[in-house]
Image (tube, rainbow, N blue to C red):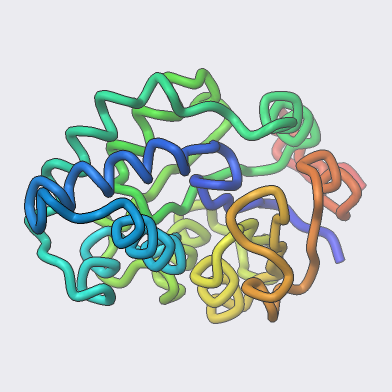
Length: 225
């Protein structure tokens, strides 16, 4: 099978943001819920939070039965620490190679769209993506397929012509529901057990280059076989 597009999750796939997430979550919890919470309890709560990565923040709050008021301090702290977010190893080298091959690239993330776009610009990789969609910009975000189907519709690409690359169960569920090939990455926050159901697993970003892709000639608007 050959593919024309790759839809990427953001956190844990393109960027390493878990340390910033942890501090932001702890700050928000102490500010809104319990300023005296002990370290063991807050660590356990954050581990539960990580089980829902890929979902939107408010969905995670519902799942953990935590107040939505944590959103504002969480985002504030995340912005203050944004310089601490780094690219995952190999991503900076991978993206231009995929674009040179003519692949259409997007980001489908549980983050708010504006925050995702700001981070991609700060890390100087925003130019590689035709579309970035956040959980606040779609009625039913991941694990529903709606975000992915929306992006494919914008690209005018069929689900069987695209792959979803993610490190969370929500990414795999969304991709499967959309009728796409799914690739679970093992350098992020998931493993083969949590990503069960993925069509393929990869250990390093460069392994994406081993998959079959159409080569699209943008100038002449035709596929090079």
